Length: 321
Image 1 (cartoon, rainbow, N blue to C red):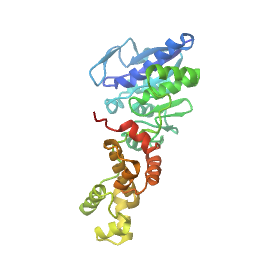
Image 2 (tube, rainbow, N blue to C red; image 1 turned 180 degrees about the vertical axis):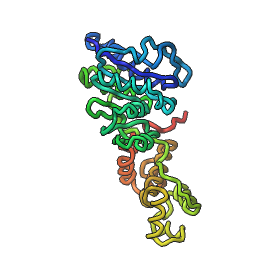
Image 3 (cartoon, rainbow, N blue to C red; image 1 turned 120 degrees about the horizontal axis):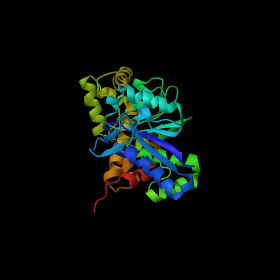
Image 4 (cartoon, rainbow, N blue to C red; image 1 turned 90 degrees about the horizontal axis):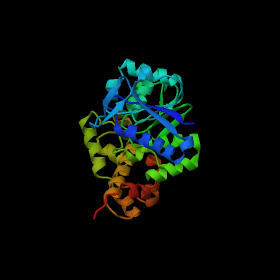
């Protein structure tokens, strides 16, 4: 018996959010025809639905006309999601279908559509790392976690950005049919069955608020440009011409994190850049980023990105021919 998967799209959706999970479910069906999936794509209106990259998909059944039980309702994301939050036909259609679905899932910022439909209230959820702060601010009833590739909370599954839809779909196949089939699907698609680390490893910046006062902005730039300097609180307070106590209070108030925490993040980012563009040994990377020893470098990477420096380098180092 094939499980019915309904995938919800809209004008401006992310094509990979649809194609990635669809290929996982489709490959599972090829490998195990008696335990596969039946896929249906729906939108508010039938006909051609353009993705934001200009390619299109065809919808045969409008969301209002989908009836009967649904095994998995999967809502994709895309750059147009903010414009779709006020589309009551879409939001109410998602809420209605969720009522008859065994489970509900979203890819990337499709989580906003689930939240707008009231499906994430009181649940732990994730989305693309760039949008987790906005999701938490807009929907305070949602427990937002910005690191996992995907999260399962009861019958609701949410995932990080774009390619994380593949990770999510593999997890759904494993939950339905066991590890062996999910592994075979992953091998066939040449992807990880369980991707190491969380999505924070893909973040392009260790985010902190830019101070509103010019002296602190200059000091923040100094920290980022001089990772091996003396960046202790007493030294930074002297550069800012403030007492240590006053400096710590003002810096934390204007950036959202303490001076010590900011220095560690800045040095971690410097180490990450060195791992990406050089082949230097880890102890040299640790010294040049201000972290001192390779043991400290390892601890900082595990704390911020949940992978080792060596794993990070293997994934993200620029290859020079």
